[in-house]
Amino acid sequence: MKRINAQRLYNWCAAHTLQRNVPTLSSRDELPHWDVVVVGAGAAGLVAAERAAARGRRTLLLEKNRRAGVKILMSGGTRCNLTHATDARGIVAAYGPPGRFLHSALASLGPQELVALVEGEGVRTKIEDTGKVFPVSNRATDVLAAFLARLDRTDCELALDEPLLELAREGQGPFRLVTPKRTLLAEHVVITTGGQSYPGSGTTGDGYRWATALGHTLVPPRPALVPLTTSAAWVQSLQGVTVPDVQLRVVEPVAGSSFKTGDESASGATASSSSSAVSNLALLGKPAVAPKQGFETASNQPPPGEKPSQDASADKPRVLDTRRGSLLFAHFGLSGPVALDISRVVSGHPRPQSLRLEFDFLPDVKAAVLDEQLMTAAATAGKRQIVSLAPNAVPHRLLESLVRQAGLDGQQKGAELSKAGRAALVRAIKQTSIALVGTRGFGKAEVTAGGIPLAEVDSRTMESRVVPGLFLAGEVLDLDGPIGGYNFQAAFSTGWLAGLTA
Image (cartoon, rainbow, N blue to C red; front, side):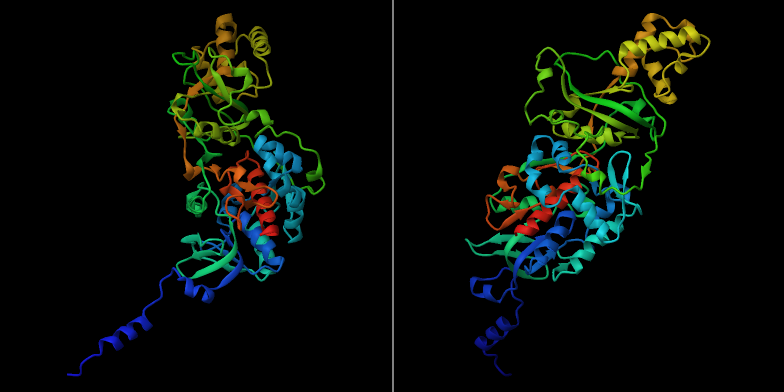
């Protein structure tokens, strides 16, 4: 038998063994070298990659999913609410104090410019009565196609189904990126991977891990724009009922206190949101008007840990937030714009089950006025049941529940309604409250609160103040806004600015 030379066998094995993904210093020059690698082909990533490539930068866009823009396709009920009908000042104001971070990004791509960009690709837009901007076609696929068309006109390489596994940097040299398919180097990296909302779309918090490994800190992520949960049986029994205009308050009770209004009440009639397919380029240039649904003023969102001045008294329940808009009852609790907008204060509370949620189902009518209306109705239509005496703005099914909550008999006639009974009904309509359990979590959240602190990112460029050459844009940042297209606008604008500077 012929003997095998051990040295020759070793040399053969070495020559035919697959190289490790992690390169050695001697192999660095042989690796693909990019000017810019953008990680995450969502709203921020698509525009960042397009802008970088349009500047002549050798650009690669990595996406873990098999298609780009998955969250764009899911947004707005698959219609894509791409922005809000306001100007840059309106976007900043909607975010409260953190909105100042967006000044430079919005100066580079404001709401009007974003709409013009999409319409320049043949996608007409419309403004609905709520101020939300949608494509006239009501198809998110058209919006995504517009951004992909812009990307396709550049030399950017779009790599789908290629997740980033590792991001590192050796000294002051280039970044090293490892995927299941290759290892590459980049002078600049733009992280646009989103947060943790809708993890089924691929947003699983990857960007947080890479940024913190490179030296960034992290504001703990939590769900925002997410439905609320409660064990109140009356809420769950009203699944599918919508109330067009409700004011909600999240209240932190004083220890040992109790609410006289119980955990019973509610219902509603469906309200449809009409829309008008008018040209909105001119409207987008109008000064901002604070939306009914959302961060109506900066005072609506005090800095973390800061108590609103009107609730500073230690012997009074503390109002954590107040919102107004449309409310949807569901089998798990509450959804709809107003519930989603107020949810961030619930998810951010260390003990959400200690909180109460107060309803005002007639926010435009003062309690004294409502009492007088009920008294007049009872006097002039005494034979009618008391459930029919309240203003029509309160849906009938809701009134039935509120009457029970007030301790009244729904079959009772108006003429039989006492002063005390009338006061109880007014309280039920204006001050009903329930105990909360919490939220439905990241799986049902539209955005993520928390993320990379804004203080660690240069708002003029989106470049990290911690890691030169690293850029961050979109939902990976500690920046979340109200419902209505504000979050998409921030993603597009910060991504655009990062692409201009990376």
